[in-house]
Image (cartoon, rainbow, N blue to C red; front, top):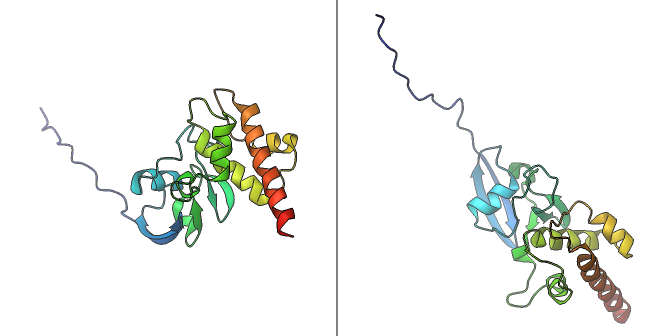
Amino acid sequence: MPPQATLQPAAPAFDVKVDFSLTINGRKHSFSVEPWVTLLDLLRERLDLTGSKKGCDHGQCGACTVLVDGKRINSCLKLAVTLDGSEITTIEGLADGDRLHPLQQAFVEHDAFQCGYCTPGQICSAQGLINEGRARTAAEIRELMSGNLCRCGAYTNIVDAVEEVVRQGALHKEAAE
């Protein structure tokens, strides 16, 4: 009878980490992570910023939406190392201390959430479309927010909340002129 081989744990094929930095919610952070770490996992697991949710992990639900340099992205699809030097804003970075961001306040006032799981992504996506300057009507808001799913079906109230903030922004711009 031949001797039995003993299984040894395989050594990792490579142990590569990439150094980079990000400004997250106004604070600069330096990282050294494996190149396959997504922005979502970096935020949730390394910084304990758990507002951005891991819904589908395939970029199909929008629960992980954050702002990168003011533009909305699905953080589950973006490798963190590719964002070196970028400014990231998560739901935790929108409020001003204890004062809610206007979108957060509008979501509360319009009852634009039920279970709340999708809410951080919805709000970050709404801020991104406002930054883009393309959300002028309810129809445009619905279309531009179509990548953010709400299993509870609070879409009408979400659109109402975003529409109110867009209107307020227009009123504030006119008053400043």
